[in-house]
Image 1 (cartoon, rainbow, N blue to C red):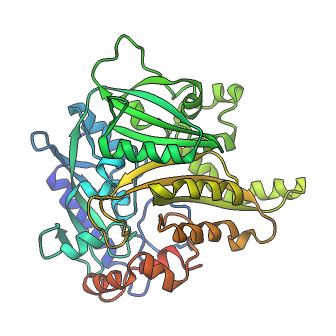
Image 2 (image 1 turned 180 degrees about the horizontal axis):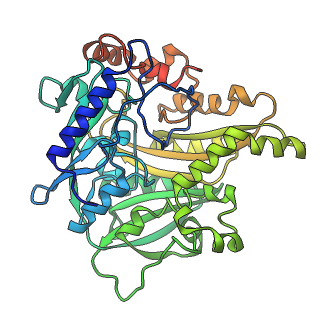
Length: 456
């Protein structure tokens, strides 16, 4: 992948402006893109969208300053392909290849470096945002658009779309050494997370990446990643073929991956969700094209299932209760993760659950985590048989209530059931409305509640 360059970027921005001007007032404004990592229901629309086709590349790198200027629709897969040539990566690289930089900033992203680097928007230095007034403004933490800079994360396009983002990069070696450490009790798991987050070490070894998996009650693992330039004579593992990464966590205490394969270790099997399509069956896997062993391919298959109701039809024929999709990422304070997991086991019963610690380094109004405090993200993605009440989301509603009770938050990429009053308390709706009035005075973009929570 070659650099886009400033002139081609300017041309792409101009096409974006023209496409926006062509959308009549009162028509919904959306991105004209074929892929998505959102799981909430959206209204189908045949209206033309914003032309972002030319905004999917890397504009340039400053190797000495360790920064990158990146277009908003550039995927992390394409971004990392460029930065790794120079031994650099973004501070946080979300798990799935087709997540875009703009999507991770206006939404939320997370990964194993979040315990030391926060969420992706915390490494943003400045960004150009296309606003509802049709203007491009450059927002930085210390300029006249600082209000937009602070409010943009978790706004999901309700305030505008990033066309250019400048981010900080970190230097990395070629390999990652892994240790999979098992815990039997959630209090010891939480204590270990807190200690590692504070010291960035475990048993005398540095820890550069930290995540984990809860497989069953009493079976919890933390994976401790250490950047290294010395493979120690060990051949790196590969989890893009027959071997499946998440299973290795239970099967071995240590491992070695290349940096590239570590960054994308979860994408090949969409964490563990590829099993729903038969891709983990050893016989079928041999014939499953390698180009289809990636998250966006499974997302397309999931879209076909939704469109034609395949799983629902099979359930009806087998006499099974109707399914509720329970696809969420939530964060609770580290001292309450055990309470959440115990409740989740009893009330939802879905396994496995991904665990990813994070620390926010400053306050971000639209996703107000306490700066400096350790939280743990719990990610769970699947279905639960609940019967005829499934369309009302009983499990999802219960999860929202429990997370609120535990002083946590949930990401907004999936189904949301909060009422407006609760939503505004959790995501600072008053500030969102103030900033939106400034940058989208005619309400060309849907507000965040309408985008995320209103049933349409």
